[in-house]
Amino acid sequence: MGLFEEMTWRGLVYDATEGVQDILARERLVGYIGFDPTAPSLHVGSLLVMMALAHMQRQGHSPIALVGGGTGLIGDPSGKAAERQLQTLERVEDNVRGIRTQLERFLDFDHPTNPARLLNNAEWLTRLGAIEFMRDVGKHFTVNAMLAKESVKRRTESEDGISYTEFSYSLLQAYDYLVLHDRFGCTLQMGGSDQWGNITAGMDLIRRVRGARSYGLVLPLVTTSSGTKFGKTEAGTIWLDPTLTKPYEFHQFWLNVDDRDAVRYLKYFTFLDRARIVELELETAREPEQRHAQRTLAREVTALVHGAAAVQEAESAAAKLFKGDLTTMSEGELLQVFSSVPSSQTSYRADGWPITEFLSSNAVTGSKGEAARLIKGGGIYINGERVVDERSRVLPGQAIHGRYFVVRKGKKDNFLVRVDKGSVPS
Image 1 (tube, rainbow, N blue to C red):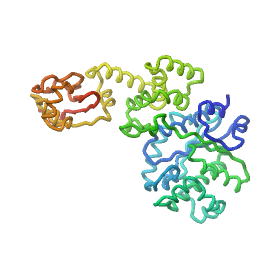
Image 2: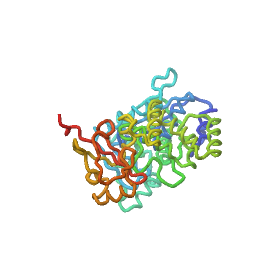
Image 3: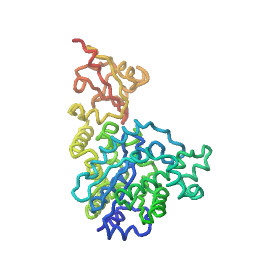
Image 4: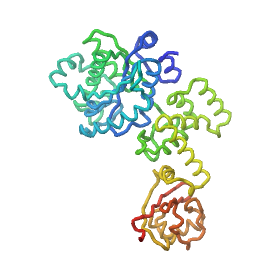
């Protein structure tokens, strides 16, 4: 099965220019995808195009990951309702370094025959003069054609309009394609479906300036069956950087995907073959409560992004949390599991804290009275144990690892209270 067929059965082909399937079957191509360095990390919304590059390399083609250190200073208007905030060169360079680390988990930059390349378009765009750009690039595009692009059209019809800066973005991306074509023989650009206009602009430029043929292929924009934005949770964006989204939280994101999305995501975000995915689909239909597809999805994607050890740690922490056995968690497990819950810090007291004061002073409850009412109703747990007496005290010796209290209010509202070790008397 060739690259086009592989991507097609996985649902990764939204549209493609004429001849893509044939050229991929006949030749080993150099192809690229651009990555926008507007944040210090990529997020799960970037995984689809990362997988596309990885499939490309596995099929013997040569992938280029182009980080937009130059275009990132401008901002792509595609899919945006308002002007992006301009970033400093220093911030963009920091973001590029973080993105490289994440791409290295998907692409082999040392492959003996078709190594991946990681490039930064700041190398050529920051040296491109305005007159040179207008003469060599701008003259090949009509304003009429640029205004007809959906991303531009939507913004020109809005109250705020579009700046010349973002209006010119598609020309800069077209120039990227030309540079990669000239330097590396790149003849394929891929991206999300919102990039279609930018990709075809690059193809037009190559045809007009070099008289050569090039190709484009776009992937679907990932959605959820429930209508929520993919990659967003109550805690915010799911990042690939483990310091921004803990591996446990990352694993839980995939474990909790909707049944209607699980098999589709297995095709999108894993390298499992068709036979295994069909098997998981049948198992999930037969035993939906076992969540076979979701468990495999969570393991596979977490291992890809964070490594096998992160999968083991996430599953171990989840098992302990399910059993309510918080005291056996390592400090790392505890901090991962409760990384996104409200937290507070309290000063050490050798004789402990009256329970109602402890709850109210750490913002678990709004008052001591509310704390007492919740305790009487059986709605307060500390470190997995229900509190039964509103006159009791929370003792320092009960703290997990000597400094953490996990407080649960009701069925699912968790809080993490840390004891300030600096206030412990010597």
